[in-house]
Length: 219
Image (cartoon, rainbow, N blue to C red; front, side):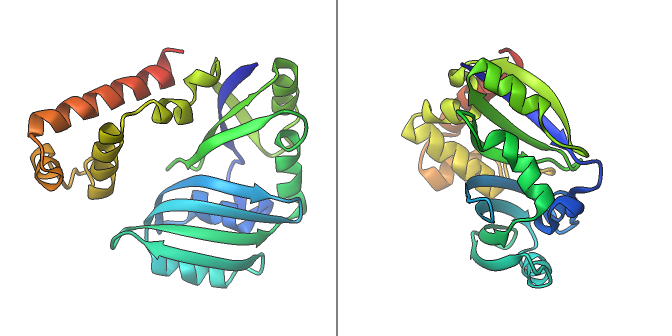
C-alpha cells in the first residue's frame, strides 16, 4: 500500500472538463478553495468546499452554470464560507474521475485548489492500482507526483494526531487570518481570544507547522 501526493493541471482547460472546476481554479473571486468531502455517483457530484473569497460573486456564477443543480452557502465571516454544490457531471469529468473510482484507490481529503490553477491531493491504495490510476489520467490533465509514502504521511493522518487544543489554536489562527498575506491577526490576539498565553499559542503553532512541513517535504 502506498500514499502519493499529486498535483494536477488541465493547462487552462478546466472549464472544458466542468464549469465548476474552472470556477475553482480560474475565477478571480475565489482566493483560496479546499474540497473537504464529496460524493460521486457517476452522473452527479456533491462536494463540500471551504472558500476564501467573494460568496456573492460565486453564487452569481453558479446561477449561470446549467450543471449546478443546487447549492447551499454557510458564511463564516465576510471573506470565508462553506459551500455545498450539487452538480451533474460531464463526459470529461467522468473520464477524469474514472481512474480513482474503481478498485481500491482512495482519494484522501482535503483537495486543495492552488492560486496557479493546479490542484493538490493525496491518493492511497495498492501499489499496482495506484500506478495504473496515475498512468490512466486522461488528456489534457497532467499529473506530477510530489511525494510517495505510507498512509501516516497524508495530511489527514497528521490532522488526526493533533490534540484538541492544537486543533482549536490552528483553526482560530486560520479563520482569523494569521496565515493570510498580509497577516491580519497576531499571536497575542489569538491568545486573548482563547484565554491563554501568547507563548502557548506560539508553541502549538510551531508543533503543528513542524508536523505539516515534515509530512510535505521529508517523506
